Amino acid sequence: MARHGRSHVSPVNPLDLRAWLAEIRKLGELKEVAGADWNLELGAISELNVKKDSPPALLFDDIKGYPRGFRVLTCSTSSPARLSSILRLPVQKTHRGLVEALRGKPAQWQTAAAGFAPVLVSSGVVLENMQKQPDVLAFPAPLWHELDGGRYIGTGCSVVTRDLDSEWINVGTYRVQVHDRSHVALDMVPGKHGRIHYEKHKAAGKRFPVVIIAGCDPLGYLISGIEIPFGMCEYNYMGAVLNEKIAVVKGPITGLPFPAAAEIVLEGFVEPNDERSEGPFGEFHGYYPGKAGTAPVVSIERVYYRNQPILLGSPPAKPPNDYSYSKAVMRSALLHDALVAAGVPDVKALWAHEIGGARMFNVVAIKQRYAGHARQAGHILSQCGVGAYMSRYSVVVDEDIDPANLQEVMWAVATRTDPATDIDIIERGLGSKNDPMFVAYRYAAPLSSKAIIDACRPWEHLHDFPAVAEASKELQEKTRAKWKDLLAP
Ligand SMILES: Cc1cc2nc3c(=O)[nH]c(=O)nc-3n(C[C@H](O)[C@H](O)[C@H](O)COP(=O)(O)O)c2cc1C
Image (tube, rainbow, N blue to C red; front, side, top):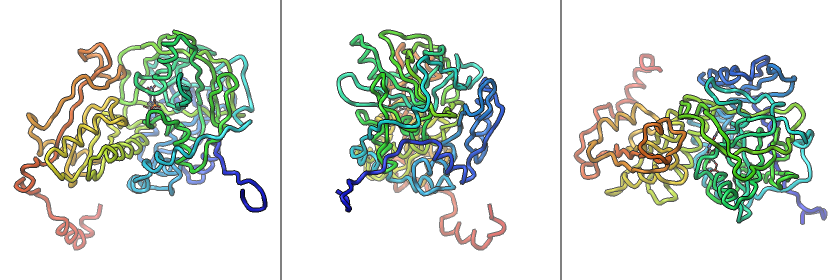
């Protein structure tokens, strides 16, 4: 009990996108765009925008064929300032500042998550409007890329599902393709948590309840789009980041919870065995993978939305893309923690490169402590829960190499490896039908090989390995100080 006899009510957070938009508008990080077309133009503008050095977030209004106010937001997470504000860290203008501010936080959030179960509230702005006759095309779902198989209402979205034999609620980001006004397909890759929930319902012949959140505070899709441990609810993790529990309302049809200030929510069921064609779709690694596959289709029974709803889009494409920056930052931090948790000592720095969509080319720098340390770090990087999906190259370098600097990393690969002994190959690893190389693999299932490149100086030769032919730190500093004008960047 608090003083004055009133019970203490902790603040709850309904994941209101508009509060966050007001903040980034003040920071000068938001640009409003009028008159663009959902048919390829939103996608192409966003794609070109994100290739700029400091891309703003884009809020599209007056979208062709749609009433004013039915908006789409893109590029929400693609700058250090916006990403730090989403993560409720002190706002950082530089990439280095963000990485430093983030250090150690994911491990703290994960530990704290158990204490942040979401709080059920009776109402919220998400319920301002309801469609009993669902029409998902009332919202300007874009055709993002020229060869996409259709319009995608879900990219920067979160999909809420429940386990069949436990109370575990999972919130994952899976792309959502519009089939018609009341049917959407869900591309959940095997092994993803929502997919596991689905497979259990399918095996039991049961309807699979689904809620799709197509817009809220971007913390929502930032966390639902990254590998949070099996069995943990992402709402708890988001609460730990915010230091406030998430306020959710319960879907009247499915009982599944969604944020009280969500922008647009679709609610329905996958009927047993209702799987239809899905894709193709331009993906995070920069290709349209293979051909269209099949995916479970959700029959939408209700749509809820705020007045003047904002669809949160996050279109993938050849990197850098809408979310490659935020995924590089987040996955690097989570992988660093995963290696430490697995007992790898002296991890100095780690980077999941944007060129590999923050999945396919990951580099860790260690201070070698014992024979075999480098291989241990490389194999765990390649196989841990956060990293295993589509990890193609895992590179280990010594601590004098900056793992985020490709020039330095590839110099170490070129000069500190003996290919015959320093590249380990794992066959039949966790791959994906979305892998552009899948067409050429000899496996029928989504398996792929993985390489671990040990680009550290050989352990037995740490002391007689040739010295680096570069001015020493001290000589560099002295020279820079003396020749300031000549050497200024
Ligand atoms: C914008 C975006 C789109 C994504 N699309 C998909 C997708 O279509 N299918 C998929 O399996 N994973 C997709 N992912 C990756 C998953 O969200 C990610 O692996 C996440 O960990 C899945 O949640 P889960 O671990 O609870 O299964 C996407 C991620 C982002 C950020």
